Length: 89
Image 1 (cartoon, one colour):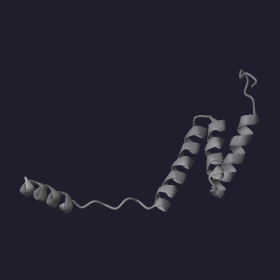
Image 2 (cartoon, helix red, strand yellow; image 1 turned 60 degrees about the vertical axis):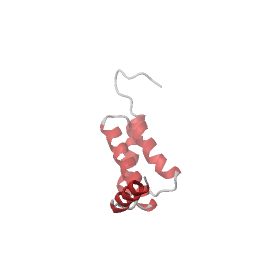
Image 3 (tube, one colour; image 1 turned 90 degrees about the horizontal axis):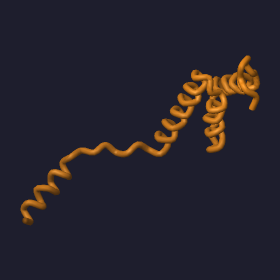
Image 4 (cartoon, helix red, strand yellow; image 1 turned 135 degrees about the horizontal axis):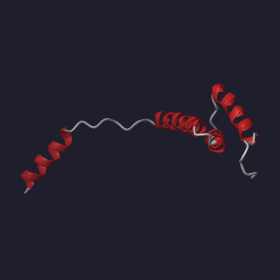
């Protein structure tokens, strides 16, 4: 039994595991994904959701890239424009 455990332990030790991503890298990935979701929401015409993704970044203390500040202004403006046939909120 002892021999079996040492072989198993040796196999585990021999497996090269990549180190987990650093917290800063994970945070940057989350920021990029939030911006992608904002754009995807806007592309679907869901401007409140798009703006919500930008607000989420601000709530966690992130600076919104200038290009997304411009998009946010456009998305805010698009929310206030009623299209014919839309119900008033």
